[in-house]
Length: 336
Figure 1 (cartoon, rainbow, N blue to C red):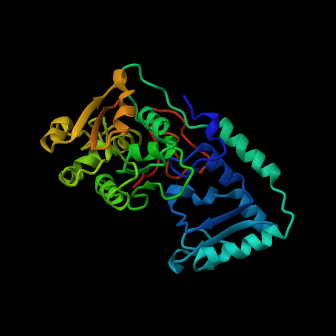
Figure 2 (tube, one colour):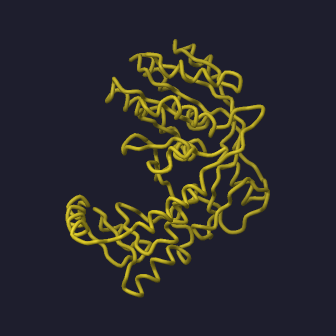
Figure 3 (cartoon, helix red, strand yellow):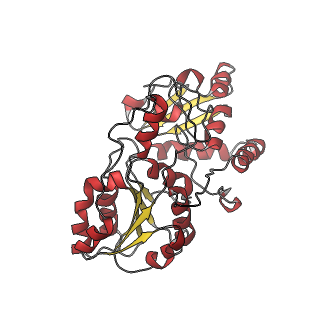
């Protein structure tokens, strides 16, 4: 199952370790890369020896390269050696860039065609389960029912976070609130509360993993006290699945501390007087009616664990991706 053609032109292009095949390949094929506020960390570059080969070659031929805009001097040339770097507020630079570009006849039609072909031929996919829901399936359904509502979505940290970025297709900035760099588990619920208080008339959705939710579930008291109409989806697979997969691939299936001892989330919601449901295969359509309620709702999604792909393993090139679940043992360091 893949993302439909309607998202071909306007969608989020996440690259890196769990990014899209098409974004990773585009970086490797581009002769000019303009990075704005980017840290060039290993999660987005893969092995630096193999990063952006076309841009590096274009730099040698004086027809391209890597350009970096950042407000922090410490990030300039920290990991990736750039050809040009600009320190300061990027909006001032882009005004000048737009002026220059508009005065020239730069033809990027062929490049646009190549990128669109990459997107069309390499969509995010997953294999549905006949027995249980998968996170990808739930996120896709949430997207189907809310895409026109322009919701704010917050996440915890883990597989559900990656799937949210993959299968919920944003067309506006600032609509996903997530701990993207520090990776702080437990971030989802308190950030949803903050967004709902700031945007009381907007739809706020929490897509959380059970491991992340457990760390700040006490904040349900705040949701109940202030009657915040947050729609809280818990992807309940009783496991810290991202770490579980790393232990499978990099540590020869020596699993430790990745199985969760979860509470009964529905009873927990009952204790706070919050409406709640159990979401399974046979009632996935209940997402729509609960999304539209003007009250807080906790949706306990019973999930079948899955391996998040694509996956760029440590030490690999950005376009050397694992595209399906594997039992093969990985070599090298595990992600940190």
